Amino acid sequence: MTEQENRRRRRVSTELAALAMGVSEATIRKWASRRKITRYGGPQRAEYDLDELFRLTRRDDSR
Image 1 (cartoon, rainbow, N blue to C red):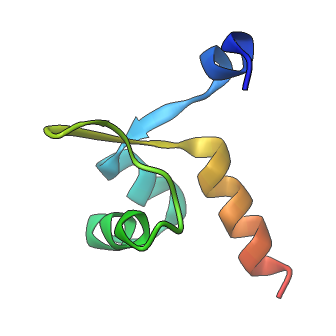
Image 2 (spheres, helix red, strand yellow):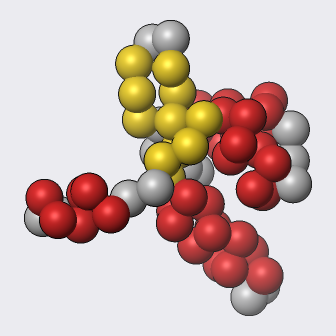
């Protein structure tokens, strides 16, 4: 990934990721622990990429 692509990424907190996906924060954390989604940030601040979350939704809808 190029630096420009990395800057375009929109990362959000666990709370906002859960709101965007319509699931609980626990579900977001579970998906990350199962490596269904990528967790970014440090030990005290988890962040998730919105584009990755939306791709996950589209993939699930196509089944």
